[in-house]
Length: 113
Length: 116
Image (tube, rainbow over all chains, first blue to last red; front, side, top):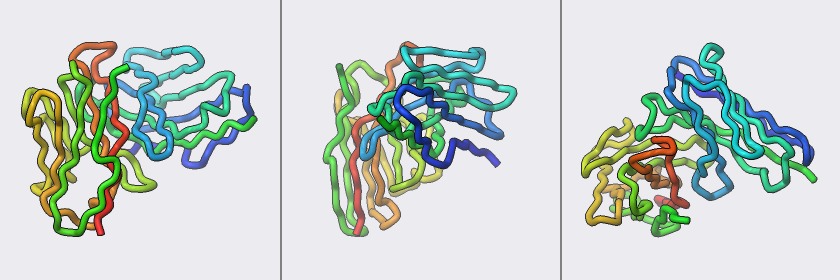
């Protein structure tokens, strides 16, 4: 069956450390993989998109890797801050643009001062 | 910065009643979507809309649901006869027709629907 799995438990880290979140998927072949941030009671906010032919993408303190052989994406936040505390969602875009997103359940990140 | 807006923010209705959830996508966007999130669960795709017609719909989007773009700015989701299990947060999203890159979706703040 098709599945998207993210770290099911909350991730607690100290301010200034690097947070690493995992997204694994099975029986999908996404053209794009996207990461979104969701705060409680709010809509998802787009962070980064990586294509199937890209290995790594960076934006400021954020870095995403995509391994289509392992069927895994890693999302890193360096020099984390308490304001980074939120739920981070992995989303698959199977066809690459303008189509439905298939979301994982998300990982809740808590950054402690 | 342009944003997707949704009204109302909260809606309480009785089972069997019709509800209309409203969205104003970002003005130059051409692709529109509805998603829902039941409390504590994943964000789930409902329907996508382009060029005044449905592009794709999920199994959730049955005959009780419909979407419309009645004018150049609004995008609505109608639930004809609400059920208890329709209680969820409903998100509208839109995408521009060009990058960077194609497919980035911009979500609204959501409408929390409670069916009693």
